[in-house]
Image (cartoon, rainbow, N blue to C red):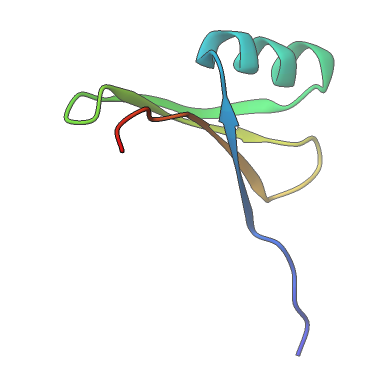
Length: 64
């Protein structure tokens, strides 16, 4: 059975800064950027060039 990594979640300090880095420096494609009001967070999904897998950026939650 072939195994692979399908999604990778990253904790980022700032969504817009992360989007700019991944899209401008690494040439990723922004797939989704959706605000989640119930958590005051954004669902940000990037895709590397020529690959169907996505990268998810999540801001750290300080709620414990």
